[in-house]
Image (tube, rainbow, N blue to C red):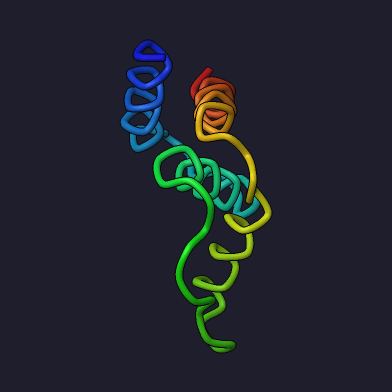
Length: 85
């Protein structure tokens, strides 16, 4: 458990050092997995209709509702490994 948590934290730092910016779908996936892994299920109100970025982020995170935090952390670490390889 502690090992997964440290891997999750390392991955969140490693992703900031990418030489190329991932595509938007990958960025949304990273965001959703990170939020689910760090905070759990989505909370708060959905952003307004004209907040396109905020709405996309909220919806991506909401799709992971019910996913265990440990599972989300593992998927996040795996995705970061693919992007940094």
